[in-house]
Length: 219
Image (cartoon, rainbow, N blue to C red; front, side, top):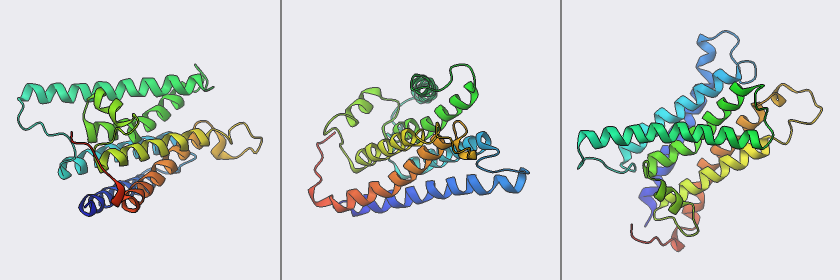
């Protein structure tokens, strides 16, 4: 029943993963000394930009993004403005949460905000692509039994994997190993990225394995 959606999901995730790989490899051709560790913030923004661009295009082409064809230009512009506003507010939210979990408030503020941008790109941006700037829909999806489609279930899994990865990435920071990936916020951003990639693989696999038992309420 869900084979078509699962194939589309796998293709989408493959394109997003490929864009993240290219965002890691291509800048090295143009920027001398580029690496995930030495130029971490540049890598972080390249990865965020790649995920945002590919997600917007692919989800729009697949028709997953809620349609606005029946609405006026003013409504579409309002929707775009609200999406940008939610993205920015999400960055502030993640920045605040990371600071409350122990990140420096003033020192390394740029690094902390950059991590917040990455987390927003991997989580909130996907919510915007799948559900649009609709906070009630977001709350519904992340409530118990709130998924109404395979894309909602996929959203739940990828967001959870990303946040868990970022949280686990913080564990090595205080250890006295003196490794380059322990510099703030390298391990957290790498953890979030690995968690996100894990979610891209785990989500369609989980849905495929449980497809015979999945039932969704009508929207």
